[in-house]
Length: 147
Image 1 (tube, rainbow, N blue to C red):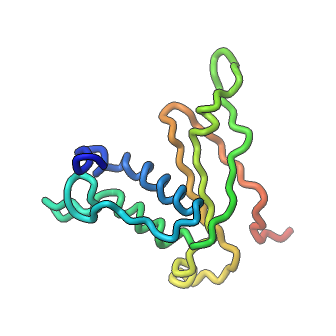
Image 2: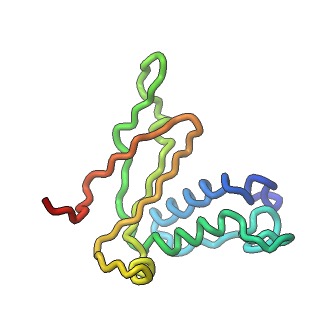
């Protein structure tokens, strides 16, 4: 973040979407770790140096590390529809406005919560648009439901 970030942006809830997307994209590229520019200081830090309260990105990192395991799974978005007055074809930017990341659930989370299910999957969705909503349908997972 240039010049220690920007107050009310890089130290606020909105920054979490960018940070989550960065974590997801780095994992897709087989990066094993992510080095944050700063822990304390400026507006980009995870901890506010004045109040010593954690900024929202801290919780993004915490949830990512506790839920998303090392095994990255393939996740794709298909069949995005755009409702518009002219019923025009869905613009490409709309199809690209949702990101999905899938990982095997982190072993720590499974053990901590006494979940012994192998094959547990954790999904992270990010809607990058402020004016487009998406309906999520999940297919291709064996949910262990028996009829």
